[in-house]
Amino acid sequence: MDTARTAAYLRRIGVERPAAPTARALRALHLAHLRSVPFENLSIHLGEEVDLTEKDLLAKVVDGHRGGFCYELNGAFAALLAALGFEVTLLQARVYGDDGRPGIPYDHLALRVGTEDGGDWLADVGFGTHSHLPLDFAERGEQTDPGGTFRIAPAPGGDLDVLKDGRPQYVVDQRPRALADFGAGAWYHRTSPKSHFTQSLVCSLVTPTGRVTLSGNKLTVTTGGEREVTELATDEEVIAAYENHFGVTLDRAPRVAEPVRIGGR
Image (cartoon, rainbow, N blue to C red; front, side, top):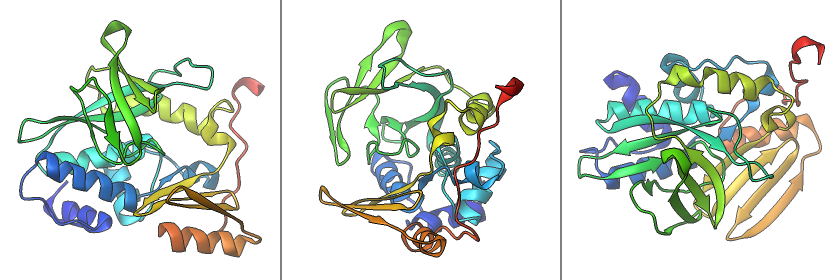
């Protein structure tokens, strides 16, 4: 990323360029990203390509004023952090399912971020309802966050479990990875009928008072723990909600797409 693109990214999330890559700066960037760039899977259902290159990710998030899912959001955020002088390592993780078992390898992309003042952090702006601030990578006790109570715990084989409110969210492999390594995981999640991303629409954003989520035609606004659900009656209302709540401009309302099935299955 050059200086101009870095400046454009910072404008996208509404923050000034930090004076130094410190823990305080990382926290500000992390929260600003969650409040500005939505977690969404619209590309899957609009027939758009999902290309895991830095150029394409920045074009989508910065130029296109869109969001994405974990590979896109954390991939783009990693590029911004590196441009600002942070030490960034891409990590692959496997997300725990409802059955308590982890999913496929490269199921999720998370970031390990080193700061100038000696901090070592787990940053994740691409996991939907997760921590609002980076988690202390070395801390094994409970970490209180606006998004809940989190803990990073040792797991077999040198991996780390990330828990929210006592429930395992995903297991992290600590070995460094490259963005291209996540291509198979991204392909699986945008094509497999077993992926929850192909089964439903989601667009969600943290707000100063809670969260706003649009799933299909159901708009949910959470404020201080109270949820207000509105059923949108027309495509025009859906398109307007994407624009008004998420800054996402669409020319048509997305529909859940039929997943690509391999071998006639």
